[in-house]
Image 1 (cartoon, rainbow, N blue to C red):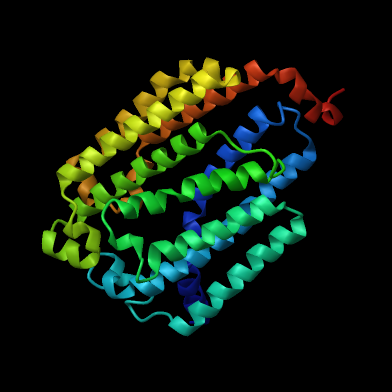
Image 2: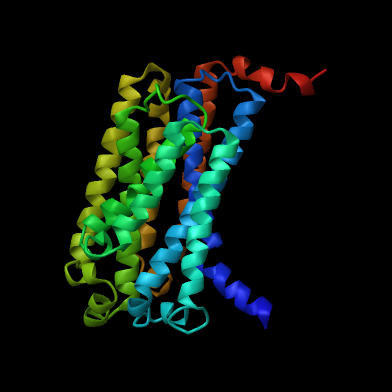
Length: 319
């Protein structure tokens, strides 16, 4: 019985959503390619792994806040009404204590690991982002289009977390790359909105569940996805053109377009409307195209950056 209650509290923190913090690895790649020049030490690998922990703890703190404030709206959702708070499985005061504990643990862990002030600032920004998104009266979650822009801002934050986990604050990641990563997140978030809008299938009910759905229509959501896809491709192209190290990545562009098309195709399928929004990114074609594009990107960066420089990482393991 006690174990079951503990599990319900753990679910509120959504540890299954920690996978989203894999986007921090993109910040690591940018730092290694553009600043460290592929001169990677084992200390960098250690910091890269440890940098994921505080981000996951803050993410869970934000999810707890989200669950508390969204409970009245989740009660009107076809599946979310079975979550811990609407179903009466957990106590809200305990969740507030959990949230505070996670925040303290995140910043304490980051301090003990010796991360620089820019990493701490990005971690604080991740926490503030969750508040701006969820807490009234601002609560951008309820504002059409601003909800996607605010939620996808977590992508640049994760980029900064990964970047500043490895390099000092005097280095600044290219604006074109930061914006491309932001627009990529906006594309994914809009696809989720589109899927969720169709999943509920009732305009009046969807408007009660999420106020932004009182403004959204299927048409406006599709147009928004097209806009974000084009902005993502534009900023990616700018980064490839401006930075010599990234010039060869133009070869990846067809795969990027293919991944975007696979995402569009999956989001618009009739059966997708019956899926939970979180399942939208689990389509094999979307995953496959994304991994293929990412793998080719890493290989080209490795080749262009001089993979020989990085072999000293394996030096102690070789004969």
